[in-house]
Amino acid sequence: MGSVWFPRSTRYEGIEVLTGIASGERQQDGTYPEGTLNYLVNMQLREFTEKLKDFGVSEG
Image 1 (tube, rainbow, N blue to C red):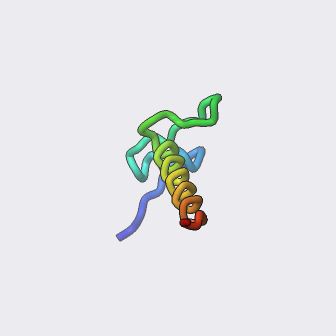
Image 2: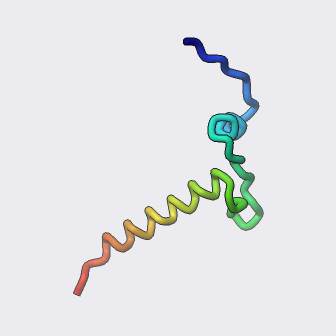
C-alpha cells in the first residue's frame, strides 16, 4: 500500500485534511473559535494546567 500526499502550504491545512476539523485562526484576544482543533487543544491544555495546579496543592 502506498500513500499519496498532497502538498499543503501550512501545517494547519495538513491537520485539517487529516482530521476533518478546521484548525482555527487565533483571534485578537488570543482565543480560537469554538469547535476548531486549536480551540480543543487549548481547552485540553488548560485542563491539564488546572489538574497540575490542584496536584501541587497540599491538603490540610
